[in-house]
Amino acid sequence: MKLQRKSGLRALTVGAVAITGALVLSACGSDDNSDSSGSDTSTSAASTTGGSGGDANALGITCATGQIKASGSSAQQNAIEAWVKDYQQSCKGATVNYKTSSSGEGIVDFNQGTDAFAGSDSPLKPEEVDASKKVCTGGQGINIPMVGGPIAIGYNLPGVDNLVLDGSTLAKIFNGKITTWNDPAIAKLNPGAKLPTTKIQSVHRQDDSGTTDNLTKFLKGSAPADWPYEHAKAWAAKGGQAAPQSSGVAALVKQTEGSIGYFELSYATANTIPTVKINTGAPQPVEATTANASAGIASATVTGTGSDLALDLSAAYTTKAPNAYPIVLVTYEIACDKGNKADTLALTKSFLNYIASEQGQQKLSAAGYAPLPTEIATKVRTTIGSLS
Image 1 (tube, one colour):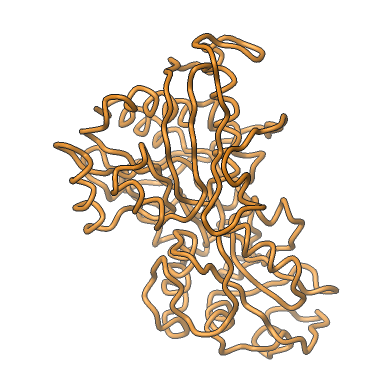
Image 2 (cartoon, helix red, strand yellow; image 1 turned 30 degrees about the vertical axis):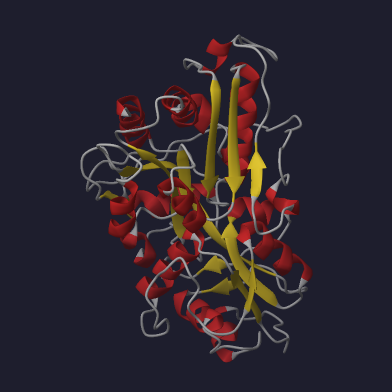
C-alpha cells in the first residue's frame, strides 16, 4: 500500500510467514494467562555475536546489547512476541522486556521514565506530549506507527454464521439499546438467518485501551445519533461486562453464549471466534481481514508534524469503498525524539529498526496484522534513525 501525507495507500502484499518456536517469557508469562498487571515478553541472551541459526546481520540491521523495558498495547502483543524472539535469537547480548498491559498504562509508564518506548493504539494527546517532555530531555514523545489492522467484532451465537451488522446496530448493542439477538434491526440485516431470542451480552475492555478508543471513534463517526459518547480509551457506555486486555475480552466472548465483543483480528483467529461482517453501504458486507483493513486505511492522512507520524483514520469510518473494512487501528510505538537515555538509546533504535524493516514487517500477516505501507515505512525508518 502507499501512504503519503494527505494521500492514499497502495496495498503491500506480504506472504504469510509461520511463527514457530518457543518463546521464553519472564514475569507473569504470556497475556493469555496473566492477570491485569500484564505480562513481560523477553528472552535472556548471553553473548554479543549472532547465533541460533544465523549471525546478527541476518536481520538486516545493526544489533545492540543491553536491556530495555517497554509496555503498553495488548493489540500488538502477538507481533511483539514474534519480533522479540527473532531479535534476541540473532542479537545476543540484548534483552527486550515488553509488558503487555494497555495503551493507557504504557503511556503512563513511558512518561514516568520507566520504559524506553511504549505501545499505544492511539496517538498521544497534547497533555501526554507535555508530560513526556519531563523524561525526554530537550525533546518530547512522538508517535511512530508500526502495525495496522482490523478491530474484529467477535460473537458467540451457535447456529448463526456470517452475521452482518452496521454502525448503527453496533452502537445500539454496545449502548444497551438492542438487547436480544432477534431484534428487528439485526433481522433486517440478516434475512433468512435463524436468530435466537438469546439475550445479548456485550463485552468491553475494563482498562484504558487504544482498541476501545478506535472502536468508539468508528461508532461516533458512523452512527453519531446512536453513540452519544465521545471517543475515549475508557469505556463510557453503561452495562455490558468488562474484561482486562484484548485476550480477556476474547476469552469471555469464547466462553459466553450470546456474547459480542471487540479485539484485534489475531485474537479472533487464535480463539476460533467468528467475526461480524460490516454493512458499510458497499455492494457487499465487508469481512474483517488484513487486506480489507488495508483498504480501509487507504484514506488515512498524516497529521503529525516534524518527526511525529500520527495518522487520522476518520475517513475510514464512513467509507463505502468495496472491500474496505471500516473498524481499523494503527498501533504506534511511543519514543522520545530527543533526550533518550544514553544507556538504552542504541538498543531502542536497533530493535525499532528491526520491527520497521521489511523482514520485521513480514511477520505481521501471519499474526493477523497489516504491514506498514511502503511510503510510511520509509518515513518510520527515517524517524527511528533520527532518535537521539
